[in-house]
Length: 251
Image (cartoon, rainbow, N blue to C red; front, side, top):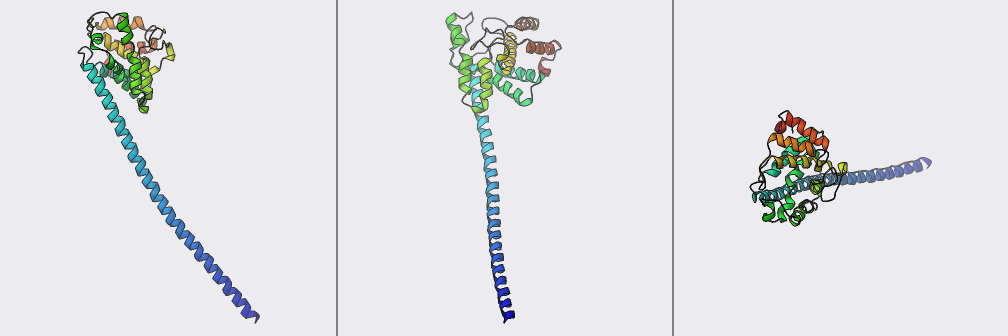
């Protein structure tokens, strides 16, 4: 009898162990199915994220191209400034790299150079193309363009840094610039770089109210403004390369 009881007990335990084993296998299969589903969902989420990233970059490029088209249309209104922003952008990027900025920040400086005058879109041609000195009232209108330009690009998150450079590219290191009267290093570095490139190209180009300066005169003017309107170190870095005849290649 005792042997029969022990056998029955063993069989009972075996059945219970089998049930536990089968339950564990069922849970394992369920977990495996869930794992594969989660893995598939994760991979799909990664694909969606990559597609969204690509879409975002396409939208960035399209928006930037639209802004550049606007800037080019603005310059096309005045033959004296045609190509000015492209030249400023090229010089600003090269100067940024020359003073040690990494490639990405240097590209941001170049984009600010491309768009630095976009705020002039609301200024009448009578002021932009006036062959003589501007009146105080006309200067007041002209001085609005950095703020207007910054407001145009500020809503675009990917141009937030460039918006600051655009706003401040007419500040002077002695504090006498506009719109905010910032001094020295309170002016964003990118804005100070764009300012040097902007002044150089403006002096080197014909304008309705004056002829272009000779290369020697341009150098003299930049040296005179270094430490007053322009950052002295950036002006010096620019002129060092200019004196070596490498303005286009090294900057």
